[in-house]
Structure formats: C-alpha cells, structure tokens
Image: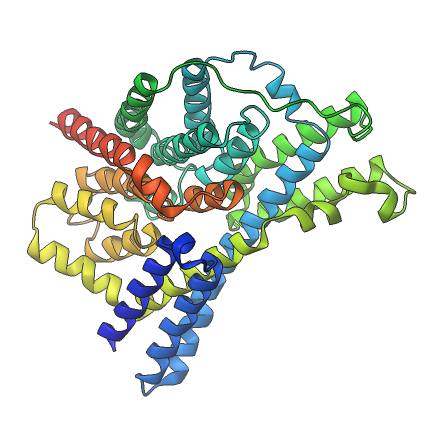
Length: 423
C-alpha cells in the first residue's frame, strides 16, 4: 500500500511540475493525486471507519487554510478595486530594478513577521502587478517575495504556522526565537538579493495608466477608507488569534465580514449591478478558484501520507539514520519543499520531549528556521509560494530554474550563520 501511495504521489507531483508540456492544469493533477492517495489508503485498509475519521480530521485543518486564503484574496481584491494600492505605488517612485529589489524584499521580510507569510505574499505579489509591467521581471520579483515572506515568517512566532506550533507547545519562547533567528533569516534573504542585485540592470517598465473614462469612479475618501480598513483587517488577524485562541481563518473571515459591511455602507442603496467592480460579489468572482482547488488537492494528498503514518515514519528514520541534529534539521527543511512543513514539524514534536530537549534548545530553534525557510526551494513548498503561483501563473519548471537555487543558497547560508551563532 505504501509503495502504491508513494507512486501516485510522485506521478502527481511530476504532472504538476510538467503542467505546460502535458497541457494539463495543475489543479486537475493535484485533485486527482489527492483523491487517489486516499482511495488507495482506504482500499488497502480493513478498518475503513478509521480512514474516514482521519480524512475528516485532516479536512478541518485543510479547510482552515483554504478559508484563510479565500478571505485574504477577497480583502486584497477589494483594496485593489478601490485603487488602494495607488497609495503605495505613488510613493514608490524609483524605476531602478536594483532599488526596487531592496525595497520590495525588505518590506516583505518585515511585513511577514507582523502578518504571516501567506497574507504578505498575497499583498506584495498583488502590489508588484501595479508597479512592473514586464512579465519576466515581475516573475523574478514574485520569486523574491516568496523567499522574503518565508524568511520573514520564520523568526516571528506569528509569521509562520510551524513557528507558531513550536511556540504554542512551549518548545520555543517568543523573545528568544526572535533573538536567535532574525539574523539567520535575514541572511537567508540577503544572499539571494545580492545575487539578483548583480544580475539585474536597468529600469523597470511601469504599467500604462488606464484612460480616465476606464477608471472606476472612486473618491479619495472611499479609497482611503477601504485601503486602511483592509490593512487593519490583515494586521488584526494575528492579534485576534492571540486574544481568542481561535484559528487564524476565523479572524480573516471576521475581517472579510467587516470589509463587506464597510463597502455596503459606502454604496448603500445601489443595486448589485450598479456597484460594478467594487462589490464583494465581484471580488469573489475574481478570486482564482483553480489555485484554491490546486491547494486543496496538494493538502489532501499530503494529509493521506500523514494519516498513514508515512511522514512520522520518515521522521523517525531520519532520527535513527542521520543522528546529527543539524543535518536532520537541514534535511527536514529540504523535505518541507516537497511535502507540507506542518506534519513534518508535528512529527518532530512527537519524537522529542521537552525533558530531552528543553525550551529554546538548539534543535527547536533550528527546526523553526529550517521548516520555515526550506519551503522556498520549490514553488509549491510553502503556502506563500502556492499563493504567488496562483496569482502570477508561475510555472513550476521556471521557478526551479530561476529561483530554486537562489532559495537553496540563502537557506544554507542562514543555517551556517545560525550554527555559528549557537556556537
């Protein structure tokens, strides 16, 4: 059974990677892979009730991620519909690729620590669409945003789900993880940025301004209201989670409801057709549904491997075979680019107790860094990457050729810095 499930997963992964040569949408490949993994699992397991129970349990976590992604995308679409991003783009006047590289990279890095890597990636990739018209340049910046968002999320208890998991379980403390990981995470970003700085020359081409007749009639007051309300919604999600202990998607859905209320008040009395592009209904139609279904398929497939105990078995095999904590952490980071980092970290948490490795131990800190940043090596290795892939239609092979080696270089440089700091 395990061999057949792995074969299905690998074939599905290859179909996603070669989406363009096969002319098969990656969402279809992901959905087929996810469902077939569970089909193999239940056909070869006598107790099908247990399999269904595992599926339903895993579906709760998957739905939380999907609702979060949907809510964040709609909020960003509303901010864009009201020309809110003009407040930012008007202040980014530089046309130099190199200056813009550092501006976007550092903003993403620190914003990810405040929000989280998924939300930040959605916001920043949407932002560069307003600044850069050339697709090749925009894709490179999108790749940088994925690296920066994951690096920025790793050193903050709120920035990445795996760091949050370690923080909630008491394996790391908030102040110490910031102190120990902010420099390695910054190095993880700076190394790719320095390489891109050397490669990039010249100026960016700005998108042409729309004709006055084509622009939606939006007053400055409406624009400012919706933009700052949306920004407040995104910033309040981690605060809501901390105060209520509810999952992040609940805060995002609450924020979406607030945004819906605000836009209804602004256009109270108008019919749905008269609201045009500035309604929540229109924003929902603009959301990239195939990307969300792609994310669903990938998460379902990984959930099958996790429920079957294969990921936990892999973690135990690493522990027995490798032995070295640093090498184990590095391998887990690279593995998180292929399968989801959440079940890998959960398996590691179950393997080692706080008696064996107390709070703020070297291994927990290394695990937070590696699991948070290693996913940047592949475009589908992190939620931030999947979001960017959906918004910008990034090809798996293109990312592998252009960005993966930069992400791996930064990832390993950050590990080296962390090891030296720990010594």
